[in-house]
View (cartoon, rainbow, N blue to C red):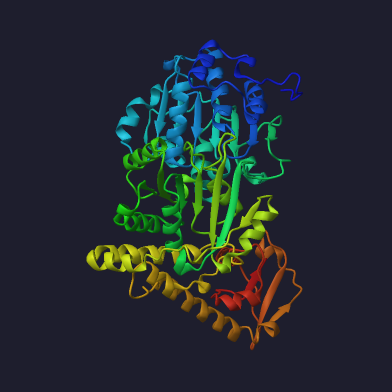
Length: 549
């Protein structure tokens, strides 16, 4: 589609859409096209594969729903014709949101729309799945039906959408997505949408995109990677002061709608329960959204928060992707996000559709390098210093609460343990250093009199220390033990694709060369290259003294 300002469409009515689609859009007050809609809908209607990226809250959902509805209308696709379009979302709430939107926009079309997500009755989904023309679901549930529901047929599926595509294609969903893609027809149109789109050649190759695929990045040359109306701040706070800071913040913003992000479910559960027992001092609703809740409860909380004018929702990252909460004024990230992309998605729950909003990131002193990463990725974030005079300590109230209700002590202990583990398992060690965590002060801030042990990490540290000690001991003579030799034994290793050979000299002389068992050694080391020195440090036991790479 041309992007010339004189000819580019401005309204949905400027596009050649059916009267039924325009009627549904008008009833939902969707009239003006956003930039992502203006640049993608026409290309999608022409049949191009699309890889599109745009800032959070820019209208990506309609950018792929409108072409799908129009395709089925133009093909005169009827309810008994089977599944024509498959829309995949990484989390249940996002799938539910897409289902709700398409139900309104396609209200005047004769198409059947289905939703399949975990946590709901599998039997009920099976009864209706063969009558769906458009199906929205999460990767795990879709794959479960592909494996277990014999009437689930994708033979006629022509349109496939991945919303929050970078999340769908990452390692967490890799196996599921690979299996789903294998079950889809090779001849199809694929649409990928996200705020932080994947650029991995490997990821895109897995989807077998057409040669004429369109790569559209609406805000590629924008000054900032986050919405223009989003004011972004960060604070440096000690671990033991975090809860007092959050309580003080909420007390000062009771006429706002706030989403507070934590790293783990246990933290969300504890803070929600703790702040609830102090709620008489608050005039706003408190809600909690996390992965281990029953699905019906999750959807109820999601809908309730959407209706509220003033509320606080404590959440894990299941609420960070694509969910469109109306009029959220503040995003508070109490734990440092895993990476820049996670920050963008979290902060993007506010300042949606050209509205204003504010974001606060709370960092430990050891996590300050995250600010450099954000700023280097065109995120305008400024420091706001903690005013310790305005902090309202809540440690004594929590101690009294835990003393009165001992079952909450376990909840506090789990919150601490899961947080420490989450920091330990973060990939970027230049930012996340679990040894720098002041767990004693953190435990006291949760109302605990003693700091619980995190045994899993203690065991891991001991094992690593043993390995390091063993490596240093074995490495003393390993350099002298490695000798390169020239041989002509290709016949004896004809089953192996490797041709460069190293032999280990022993005190009795060079070990004999015989049949090759070294492919197994290669798998054990999980590396495409291999040498004797690394083998010795790993204490591998060999049937033969022959190593290949």
